[in-house]
Length: 187
Image 1: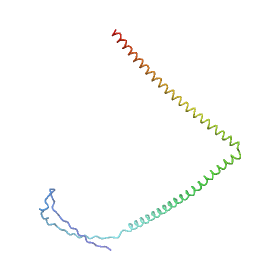
Image 2: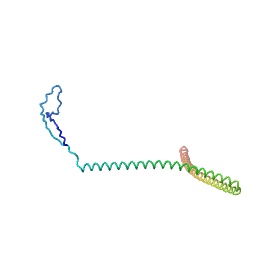
Image 3: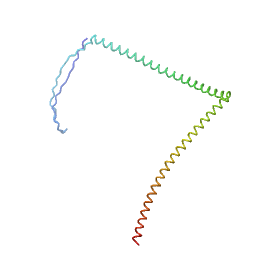
Image 4: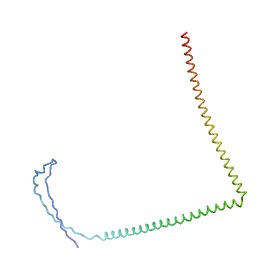
């Protein structure tokens, strides 16, 4: 079972060229090349038993891992589909229960209004009182805030008037003093 092949190789030697550029029209012919022919025999052998066994084991392991990966992928896909179906069912059930609860609450309120008018009137009165008190508190807060802001503005305006009055009095006094000096200088 040994195959024998013949390989032939050729080696050519060429002269080294200088790095300077040469004109392409004035090339010298290449020197004669030496050709050498060698023959080499190669023998192809069959792999050893341990190599075959190792390759077989590796292939079996890869096949087992691929099968396991396919099983995991199938389970994951099935779980995903199951969770989507479960969510859809739960959403519809939840929406139905929410609608039922609201309907029951409305019916209970109407029934209470009809069967217990005194209780309903008291409840409405308490709610009205609470709303009135809250409105009064809001008005009082707004009035207090406005008064505080007005006091601050009045204080700022009084300071400005006082500063301007002082400056004007000073300037008027200065002008009167200058006028008196000029009058006495003329007289």
